[in-house]
Image (cartoon, rainbow, N blue to C red; front, side, top):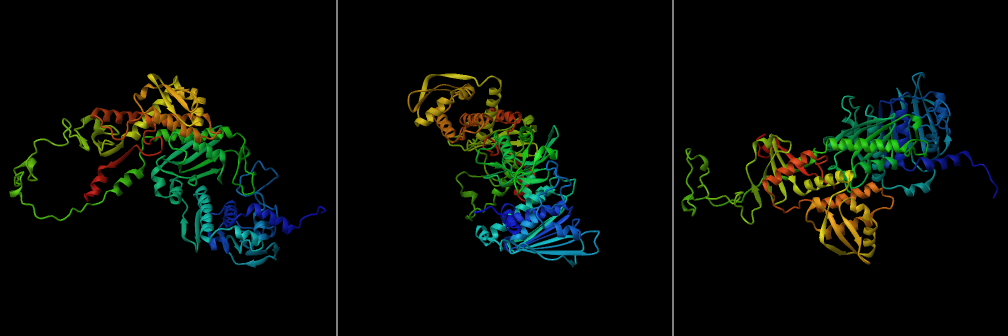
Length: 601
């Protein structure tokens, strides 16, 4: 077959396959054009998930008659003043979107420029351009796209349901709305309730993110701000206790452009490695700003991928900014913890009983009188409380005691009780705190181990009799291969024939521990490691697993001094607000919250 030149319409349809994947792709291109035109308000309307209709209206600069005639031609753009692709300061620049859309759908553009006496309109039907006609429009541009993919029906079968396509449109508009809080957005369609995001005030940089991501994000967000060598990273990140099972809650922007970049996602994962397991992901909105020449946005037609000239600098800055912010607010409990605690309480209705006759009671309670003081409820003072610290009953589930007055003023207060040998209740000056003793101690041990490894390694204690542990042969081999790494954490492992290892030394800071359970867990984690997982991340997994096994377990009764010592260590240790798995270590309730439970406020 001889070589031949493809027709213009065929070329446009081929290009459309790269630029227009689904209705959301069309919305993205049109909204980005509106933003580049200086719009302060953008309205998006869809029908059938965008398959039947997409209408984007803006109040931007609009186009002249001549510009309108040229805008639907391939590679015609107003975004580049020169052929320098390293100096791109706009969201669009390729000049492919409008001709690509017009080649596969019915496209109608109505626009008015300030220099024109009236508006103009142009139609493109499956690549066939009509003549330009006068139209009525006060300002800006309105673009309608009808019957998407009708000229390429084979593409229609790849579209999902109207609701799914509508949700994809919503996600595109959400991301663009987050990147430009100074612009008002409206999104409407038959498959959704209308959404309106008004222009956010400059005085509240979190306002737009809270509007889009919800009040929960605002309540649990920490400020991110860092700059180095002309690269700035700013935005907001959620506390580790506010996490998701996927990365869909991560919104990343480069010079105002929403992107899904592997380098940025990897930097976020690395920064949260101390706080979340691999199957949990934080919520955040991060903005990277740098010179246009330091980043290549011309990597893919969809413009969602970028390449940095100095990727190491960008990644390192993101990791450092996130880690510093998380350490700064490490003791802050997620607001959702207190809210969930309040919501968990429900009024209790006791069953109706016969009237109580104190005269026939075997305990012979005394009737109440105003002069009886402490027996005002009419019961005789018991000889001994079942919850007396001095002599607790064998099956007591609550252990309580009087706090030291000066400890009440400390951030985490003074220990007052231990409930179910799992939770410590402490009293603060203006409320109370409930601490998960295992989660809290797990974080403390983890931070101790990291500090020890950075200095000279974790101190070890020799076992009088080495513990021999039988494992799967592959698991045993993996442990033996990483013996040097494990030794840094105080765990000395040696191969002991096929399918077995010998443990000769353990971390001295942990005292007695379940060595067999620890080694089994380590073997299971190592089996899931990706060969490309950085060594630093692997070591963090090791220390986190050891910390979990070496922490105070739930179900252990603690003495008052032990509880208070744990609280004081939590106040001194960084990141103590969350355990290594991203769960909160404590929940705080203000006195006003407690009073609200009882209808006092």
